Amino acid sequence: MGWLLGGPGPVLGRHQEGVDAMATTSRANAIMQYSFLSVFANDRTIDARELAMLEKLALEDGTVDDPERAMLSRIFARVTAESVAGDVWDEICRFEAKYQIP
Image (cartoon, rainbow, N blue to C red):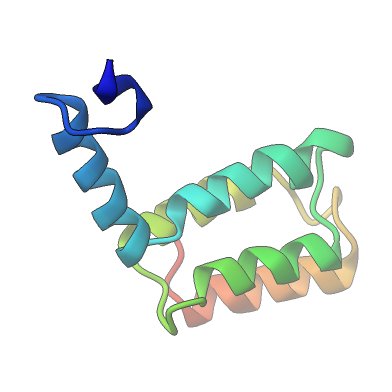
């Protein structure tokens, strides 16, 4: 029963260690969660405040790593120049270019 509560367990313990390791090296999960809970949940688009938060999450450790790039690419692909404000689109394009987001 201890493994259900986060105690050591043969499978969960190893899995949890991997999750903790990823959490310290990449914010990709936090970016994904934020996009589902805040960005697309209310209006299916990105506003300036939401974009600033996505950027803040990605740059929390000073760099944008590959998992973060992949997640941001998937998020940004859900909007177009017509579905967001002009300044938001310009910032998405700038951020993609600066941090090599495909």
